[in-house]
Length: 126
Length: 157
Image (cartoon, rainbow over all chains, first blue to last red):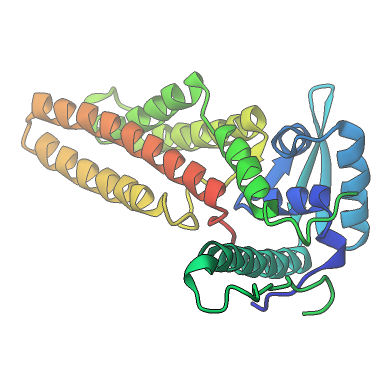
């Protein structure tokens, strides 16, 4: 799997939805996903439609008695994109941690007159 | 919408949300009771052929156990809002428990059959009861493993 940013799942709301769906469940129900992601009904509806249109999420609608139930799961394409994006974020996190460590160790190093700055890679410049 | 590219906390936020999702995977009280009934049916099967009146065979009991298993799986999915393959080996942390469930069931059924064949009814009942308790504990361990993997995002297919 290659670490690759995906502009579609880059915003935090869509990243949360996709990241939760990629956690290991086969299907996640609308209310469970909404509560875990900490978003509103309307936001989840809107963002899930974007992900569904992109072919990243599969939606199944059903009902228990008279209560409608909507279930979500990642498609193979969506799973691949999420894994790539999460790997990219993990690289970013590692880079950020090493920068922090370098800054903390700064006063002890020889070249503390010129602090090093590591710029995180920008989206789309993988 | 907030940009996460320069937010090193994005993954941390996702971890918090996954932990919230995993917490939903706690089974309701009736689930473990149902699991107990399911295994009681399975371990009652060896007794049925020998001690129940003529006409009661093993397969209707096993069929009832299968129906209870399907019902429990469906109920858990509806109650938690999360569909997981509880019987599969996909979840690394739940895998030892699934293997334990299978090995335990086979060992208990063989032991029961052995004891029943020798007319040792009471020891066979004790084995069946202990096996039911052990299966419920193993099922709890498996769900704990699934929760752990959901939290860590390790349960992906």
